[in-house]
Length: 194
Image (cartoon, rainbow, N blue to C red; front, side):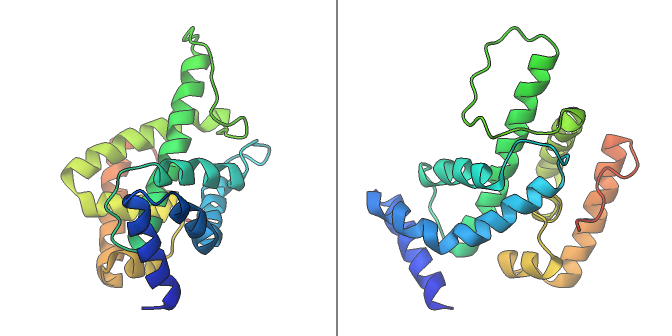
């Protein structure tokens, strides 16, 4: 285990214990990886979207740092970051979708920089709902979809993060894609990440 991983684990545990300075020390150690994740998420959006990867990182980090999670290690933190980034985007899509349908609610943005392509709002919500159903049936497959499709991680990165063999990751990815395809009833919904 590397020195940085040890430092990150200690800072995560200190943050959980209530050390206010731990979150400030942690961010520089994980920022590049979080930013890379955010950029991967944003590649799936239209070219003129207004969300910047930095805004997505900031929102996700605020949610993670303020949460009450028993952090295990760096991999656990990065995996949760991928999940939280997906939640930020899906929550925003649902909000925008409700507004477009005349929801009558007053819009209160947490971050004016957060946006998802209007033509993909319904798709993002449908995929998220299907992924919730998959989580109930096959949690490991759902986790791999989240990391691969939403997080843009490679098979090797997923293996490193989860401890699952490459063969199992590929098999679970294929099975999950087939199941989700059936749920979504549309070709190309879950294409291979770039």
